Length: 353
Ligand SMILES: Cc1ncc(COP(=O)(O)O)c(C=O)c1O
Image (cartoon, rainbow, N blue to C red; front, top):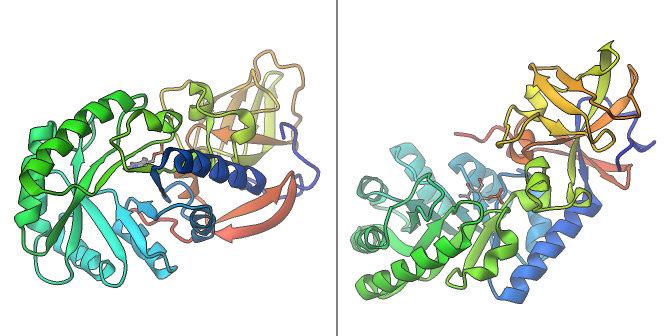
């Protein structure tokens, strides 16, 4: 769908379009892989923030959902989802109380990577299931060694009101081997200290196709795979025809022969570069670069592309990073092969606290 289909040109812009045929194909393809490998699959909903799409993911065979914020967890709990993993730790008593409320009547887990976090989470009320977050090379949160993972697992196991549930990591792209090495040793040490280590959870769309290379992993979390985006396209982790989320924009101006300005800026495309040059990919103009964004304008250098959009034309943009785009719009438009089939309010939009 490089050119804008007739069924979409009349939409007000900028507008986030979701291709449901592609969404369904992406869900089915990933789930089939995990089923074949015997790894549980837990889609991360921060990509779409839509209970309607989460239902499709569970119907396809997913085991539960991953969420990133307590407020996001609450939206999905209220929508009836009964197996949630919060992939962050909590330090505030108010949020911990909300987590305990979520732990009643559903399967709920969260993570910790320090004694301070374990001490904060420990307490009365519904027991909280806690996984030890491990840094297997991603360089974000996580204990730094298998020995530290085992120490923290033992601390969780002994803490009032907590249940040690396993190990979790958000690895670097291409970090499958490192996950296998770290988690194999961490599991060995945890089993020696605590006697059980039920879940070993890894994740990330860039390494999804290599997930079977870390057989120690029992569960995989991925979010972006449902939409894909320019960053995955550029890494070769998806094909153009797998990109399900695009922003429809209007050419507002063509101040020079080779520059056009779109009505889509950082407030819809986000300013995430993801290590790339430019702010999105225009499938109809593959040599064009979105060279600059202000809040409501996107400046496109058309490069040597032959066809030139005129003022008033509509163009499609694949954003660098699909996930934060979902957090920027109240509503997304659904289509199939360029025919609008509906729209959805983004239920968990703004759940960043
Ligand atoms: C903890 C955690 N798990 C899983 C994911 C899913 O990663 P991806 O969107 O690459 O599939 C993310 C993404 O940010 C994450 O932070």
